[in-house]
Image 1 (cartoon, one colour):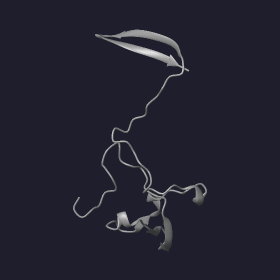
Image 2 (tube, helix red, strand yellow):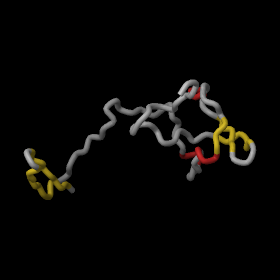
Image 3 (cartoon, rainbow, N blue to C red):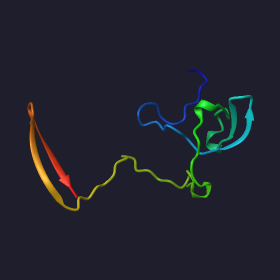
Image 4 (cartoon, helix red, strand yellow):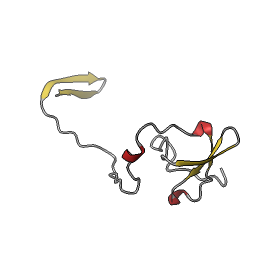
Length: 102
């Protein structure tokens, strides 16, 4: 769509919600103006109530977005403590190994 700014990527890995942001004022019955970060300066600050989500929690415990770092591959490294069970199953022409770890 022409003239629409998207928040992040499109598709499955796109963020569901961006924020939390402070509500500056209520506009009409169902619209709110938000205090957005300077990174989102090109986004219009007025949103419909259906697009907002309650921020449940202590505002003091919210981490700043700028200080967070995410790996490029977006994966975690799991180290198994103990292998409890190991099964090999045949799926048509391929073997699948299932491992239960503690």
